[in-house]
Amino acid sequence: MKQKTFAAPQTGGVISGMEADRERIPAVAAHPPAPSGVTYLPGEGVLLLAVAMPDMSHAQRRAAVGFAVEDRIARPLDDVHVILGPALADTGDGRHWLVAVIARDVLEAIPPQRRMRLIPDVLALPVPDAGQWSVWAAETRVLVRTPDGAGFATAAAALPYYHLAAGRPGIVLYGGVLDAQFPVLRPAALPTRPDPALDRFDLNSARATSRSLALPRAWRQIAALLLVAGLGHMGLLAADTWALGRIRDTSEVGLRDALGAIGVAAGDDLDTAIATALAQTNGQNGPRLIPLMTRVFAALSPYTGRVTTSDLRYAGDQNSLTITLQAPDITTLQDVETALTDAGFRVTVGAATTGDGLAEQQLTLQGAGT
Image (cartoon, helix red, strand yellow):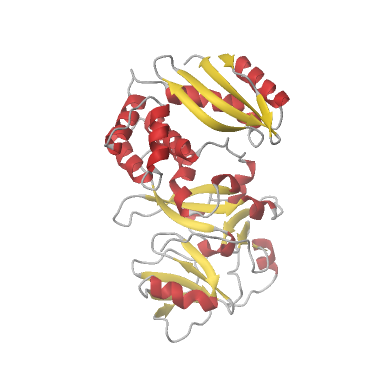
């Protein structure tokens, strides 16, 4: 069952380890007691996922993880932070990573606390064995950790529906009391400290992450796939398998347009066209789209949140990128042109237009050592 929505915390804010040290928290408190140096965020405000990704470097995995979860969240990527967590145990169907998704407005509403890591309270529970749940049951809310390493928080009244949908797993109960309808295997004490794999996991790490430069959806999909294949230095088979799995929810029309934008003709066999795009980008003699895009977006990074793209076209024979930018005014577009020129690009500027409070201009870029 996919969780498609998440909301702002509704359970009384956060509880810090410093507070837990000062007062005794009853076993059925709304939150498990937080260890020193940790602030627990109510799990209702965070979507936790176990995400399968191919073998790649940590930096490349961080760059691609947002695209890997885009079809599993109910808000645009620009509205949320996607935080890559630690690797999870292999459950038999490949390696997964813990991923947390939190709305930007939810995180911004939480005052940062110096030297305190921010962690969803669901992660206070240990990962259960296959076919089981780890549960913390308070009077009005319940925390659940699932065997894949993810988990969720929900209202106590909603637990029967989640439990039935999951096939009525056995429950290891770490706090509180459950109705007789739930198959409690045994009560258990919480671990004395959280899983060491979470020692560097901190939702606060997203505060320094700027908003990404907006791309049309089909282009975001292609850019993510090419990023992985072009920079990952991994086998094409692994890249292709992941890529083909990731584009199933992309509209066919948008996908064909995006493939055409990078010079790959999409005939009747979309899988072959995508494999061709990946092979060309990964090959030494193929188009150098990824280095070009990397330098372009590095030059545009100071303008994230103010400048968006409405179209991208790549010419492989000239190794040039034509990009249509939208900004609040002409002055901003002129500043962008200067930034790209200063970055070493040869910039050919099209006519600028204005309307509906936006200025738009097409730029063709070449150079910068690509």
